Length: 93
Image (cartoon, rainbow, N blue to C red; front, side):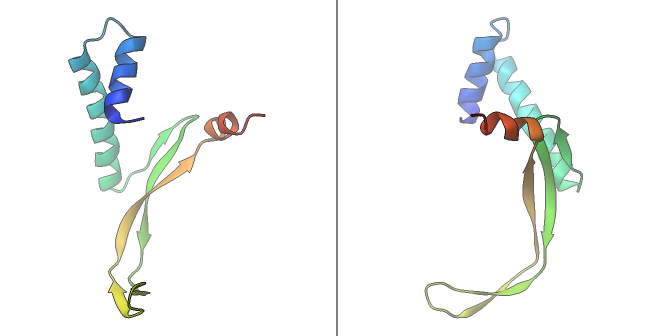
């Protein structure tokens, strides 16, 4: 599902919402999650999952084409841990 499909689904389920309002809602939610992660916080959506940031140390990697060693700088990467309800919903029989 793309962002525009999410906005359309939101307006389909809530006919009182204008598309512009749904766009604002979805954009605001994504911006708040992004801002929280950028400041080092975690975001927990009960039943869905938890977004957090993990630190990866600098290391020596390998270029797969040439086999040459390459320095990989330290970085922060987003991490998502699935919630129990979502996990159970995905794995129903």
